[in-house]
Image 1 (cartoon, one colour):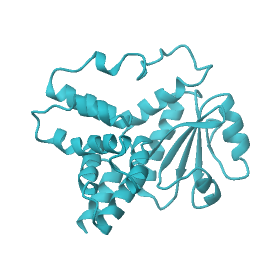
Image 2 (cartoon, one colour):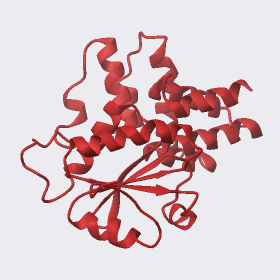
Image 3 (cartoon, one colour):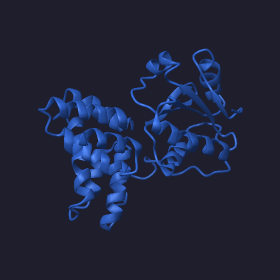
Image 4 (cartoon, one colour):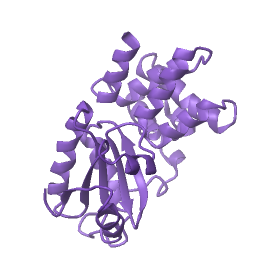
Length: 250
């Protein structure tokens, strides 16, 4: 380990994460030795930490050995990655994400630090241009824009961008977008609200677990289409998708 990448536990969490996050962002990786997706994501985070040459600190927390911290920060699936800036969590995701997604996550976090290095231009944010100002024309471009919006938790705009002529991937994703809209508008309640909140926070492992429980209980007609939508959103190579596809097949 180094000054940029370090192991953190209950005893030094306040000093190494909370206090340090007032100087630069601290990315906390909750992991466990038995967790296969953790072993996939860990090297990606470490490589990016070295690549950014100290612009953020990577704190690795063994969730098995630090269960109180895991409970305190509502870790419901691992790997769970939480970004701290100025003493609070500003962004997070769950599951082994592809490296481009992790890079986008880091870009979002780094721009939230008031003293972020000016050498790298700040990427445009979701609020810098109205979403309605630019609608891609081709079905593939519309689909990619809809997926980007869904990763931001915006089901309503995602529905507007989804191509209507596509009967494949777009139609798999549509129930997921509609689900977020129906929960937001109060048409779906109960456990659906918790699942939608996890999707919007990119806690996909927790959302899939909730959907699986709903399917096992029966009576929730939207659970399976929403799960299929998450599979399509995250892609076949996503470790969480692979794990839950196996559970559905068993």
